Length: 387
View 1: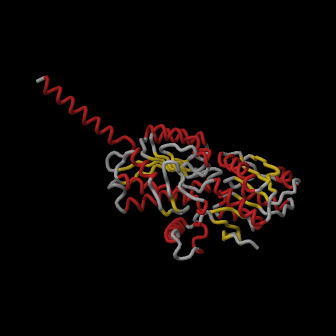
View 2: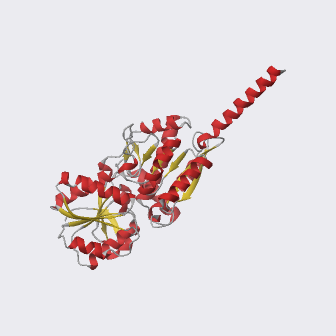
View 3: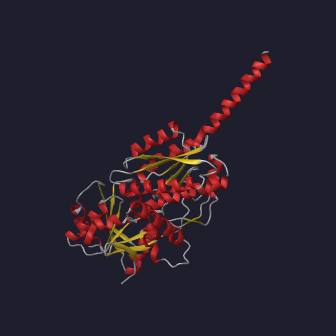
């Protein structure tokens, strides 16, 4: 009798253990829990809002087509407001309470850098939608990102400057994770590119007027200005430059990739030069371009559904979910280690930002040619051509 009881107890323990393991990581039952940390509101909402909309659209279509590994995706979106502290709290909630298998986002570099170790330690796949180099360098086992790299953006900007005969520049940047990371890359790469930074000023991301900062830059007789930020302040920079009579070219970072920024800048935004993904000029790509079909499909679906222009930021969320889907299908299982390994084996995957080629020591997967050099023409984005 005791042996029967012991056998029953062991069997029960095994069943409980199996159920616990099945639920671990958000893959239990008929669903896969995927968290999403987006700055849907706040100063970074130009990033987070299109990311949220894109993620919901992607998951809805994926579920309608049978889901992933025969399971439906449950997308759990949390609004961080662009606040790193809130992002950490929400990431802990998603990991510890909701038991998600993966997290898409956060929207900003500052948030991503704060949750990177948290996700990696918990063995929860993180696919950041932010661009700072330090998110994926040094490499963390379970942490990847989808935007083009800061260093690639800087290299492309300095390349255009060289072609224009520009060698003396002023740099202004926001006091954010993205701003700090960009400033570091600009100052590191400038000497190698024959560029001299005569002045580098940091401003508050919530500032509403930068004439004081820009007056200092003007006094240095620079040949161009580079602004590195993601917030609406990008439009204010352009307006202030015109107001105080600065006539040198304004270069923005790849954080300028939402046409709403150009609209907010109005006439002052004309001629801004920046590196951007091909999504912003998808219609101009030749029909045989490897990205065109995907870009046009995403653009049509997003704009018809939400009645607003597509942006590169929504594209980062699209790519994150596409990469996640591809890796899970390749792994054939909901095991974090195997999915991470499968992700590192992804090559030639066409996304909105470029063609992804990940590896064990490259968790960004994009090359400098993922960027086009763009400009503002008539309040819209177009390919830059030197006059």
